[in-house]
Image 1 (cartoon, rainbow, N blue to C red):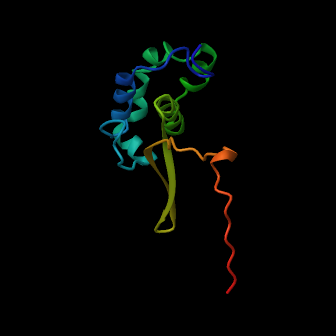
Image 2: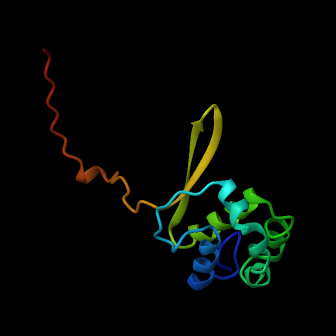
Length: 131
């Protein structure tokens, strides 16, 4: 078992095909999209065609939850889950335009940098200055 959602890691070609349904070119496309873009592109209806392929990767109990009764929110969730397998995520930015709130979404790569908490690598020299 791969993790809590998938039996196996989804194929990158499948993930790229699904990314294209969102109006993006590939996993490195930094363009923004909104739920309205998904409606205009008919993403939800097109994603239904990929459900049999996605079921091959999802655990059966998770497939029942995420791959049925699709709406724009579930489409974004599915994309987020697929991207997470390749160390990418979806960043959400909320913007207000003419007193209307819109959520903008963008694919970003996870930062692989971690804070080094090893006590041996910390410089113990501290300088305090008071003005």
